[in-house]
Image (tube, rainbow, N blue to C red):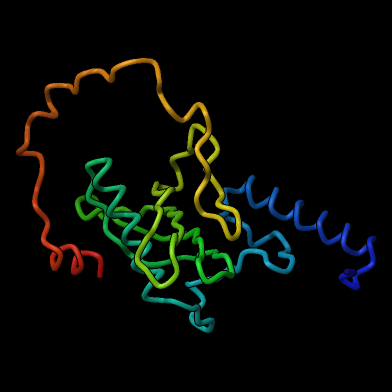
Length: 193
């Protein structure tokens, strides 16, 4: 059955799509305002322009705060959410977001531009994969993943498993259980809002 699109047009469409996603991959999915988006490209929203409303305001704010929360847990910092700058998202029911925001350190009151990459894993469920949470100034030592449209989970590769023997013993400082804190659901919810 024919799609009704001439072969030359369909080849041009595929070429433009591939070129677009290659440029998105090079930028990490964050700074793509200068790239002209083909159909089914990432949707870009400028949150600092008060004239433009953006969808899912509450959800995007929560995703941004979740990224800061993850960074604070992993790095032992205390950054706080200040405001959203911009974000890009896939145009799917299950979306992937690249969020640029401003956070601040309450001790030094300095502002930090912060990047968050988060993907929804299921429709209408709070099942998320947060794969980027870092200050913009911290360049990654390897290329960060850009989740493809319609697929947020990568299959395992053969080198993803360590089959070289037993795992080493944990360092002794992990035996100190006083470094953990029980967070009640209500506390966690209010700290994100």
